[in-house]
Length: 138
Image (tube, rainbow, N blue to C red; front, side, top):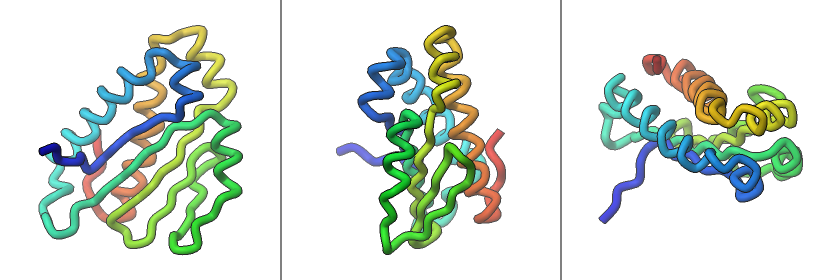
């Protein structure tokens, strides 16, 4: 039996193909965010566990997905490269684009993959936390 983590991160196949170190980075970032959110007391109410699904895309995929708007969810464009949707304030789906400039940089400096992806995921996670009056993650 496997329990699903409250914060999950995935990446598109195209992005993974372009950034070979991305899968490992995602595992590390996901573990850090889940551990930090747990120790910050985000899950004290077991009946209303916050669920955040973060999906990383190339800029082209992100732009293509932007044209699809679910009717049952509130869509918030947080930035040019971040889009969030929610229907009940306990379940969030976040699309994050790795821009063309970032992709170029990451291909030149693969050691930055985890740092840049972590920074983007943490920023949007903390925006959700602020909206829900939860403590910010370090």
